[in-house]
Structures are given as C-alpha cells and as structure tokens.
Image 1 (cartoon, rainbow, N blue to C red):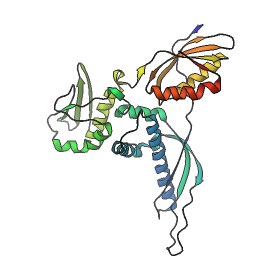
Image 2: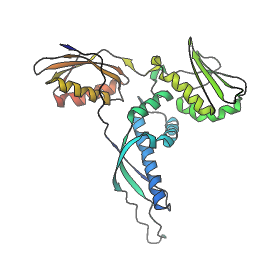
Image 3: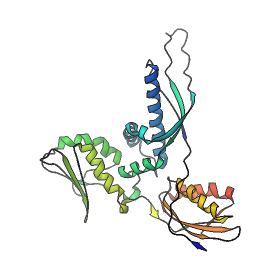
Image 4: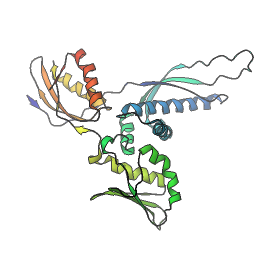
Length: 294
C-alpha cells in the first residue's frame, strides 16, 4: 500500500459549452460582432453558473444572476472558437429588406473555478449554511434611502433583513468619505470598506461566505475506487474527480493500494451534491471497469 501526502493535480479541462447569440439589427459590422460575442460569452458564463448551482434558482433570482454576470462574463472566458454564422430568416417579399442581424455560434471555454468562487462569495453555494436573515444597524452618514442601491444584490443573494438575527451588519460613512461595513456572528467578524456601497456589500459578504466554516458541502467519508491497472490511471482519475466541480470540492488523493492489475485509490473530498456525484460515478465507472468501494 502506498500512502500519499495530500496532493492536488491540475484538473482536466472542462468541455467547451456551445452557445449562440445575435447582435441588434442595423448595427455596424464591427460593433455587431463585438455585441454578439459579448452576448455569447454572457450566455456561456450564465449557463455554466447554472450547472454549478446545487439547485436551480427561482426565476427572479436567476434573472438577477444573469444581470450580475453579464458585465463580468468576458473576463471569465478562457477561449472560444467560432462554429458557424447563424442564418437569419429571409424577409417576406412584402417586407422592406433590412440587413440581417449578425449571429454567431461559438464553442466557449470558461473559467469554471473563477465562476465557482464568484458564486461562493455571493452565497449561492452555501446550501444549508445560508443565513435566514441579518440585522442591520446604520451608523453616521448612511440613511435608509442609501440602501435602495443594495436591493438587486440582496435579491440575488437571497438575504433578508430582520429586526433581530444572530448575524448582524453595521454600515457607516467615515469622515474620510468612504463607507465601512462590519459583519459579525458570535465571536467572529468581517470588515470591509470602500467608496461604493454596493461593492463594499459584496466584499463584506464575500468574506463571510468564503470563510472555512461557511464552505458548501460536507467532508464525506473517503471515496474509494478499485480496478486501476496502473498507478498512473488513478492519478489521471484524480483530475477527472477534480473536474466534477458541480458536486465535489477539495479533492485530494490520500492512499493508493497498489496490487497487480487491481489497485485501489482513496480520495477525500467535500461533497456539495451527493445525488449528482452518485450519478456521475454510475456514468463513469462501468466503462472504465472500475468499482466504487463502500
């Protein structure tokens, strides 16, 4: 038996996601292409975010998420390849012929790790650890009307203001002109400051939801799989497990029991979606002649 120190391997590249988008009619060619690209990137990032969520969001929150991701989408794209120009329907004979809007179909590879981190900081992966509500105290320089700007963010995060709650937040504007926020629960606190109240709010809650005790999923019993012919096959399967970021996090290979033609590997991982993990194992193991060890 070979006992390994905890190790991370570079995850296998995710499959590109195919999307299509079109520019507005009548837009100049160069601008039209840029517009169509940006819309395709936004769709690819939004679809990927939806696949990473443990459960689908209600329609209203889903639309808030789409709007939140759209201006950030281009930075979350790793690469893309154009598949084909989408064909616009020909106008009816009686209609005045207008230039058809430019349409693009792309295979887009996005940064799933960055999207997952973004969703974590928004609290969308918190699951049962998501707070029911928070109490808010307004200090000097902050009025109720200032909170209007936070309403779309609160709706996206699924956060509700309450008169009393274990989780408390204070906001104030310092004499220097910038905002300061403090979030605390029991003996633990988080602090953020900045000129923009919305960004401060995202930073503050991002720190809270990124804290170790708020991480999604549970550390499950070691995941064992047998049937590996060679040690390299087990190492390669670690990359596959790490790519299942919609149900697993923090995948580490700990033990490799080497036996001629039938080695067994054991991993630790934080399971965020047990049902999805089970489905993936049932899909992947038989074709590789591997067996889950209970």
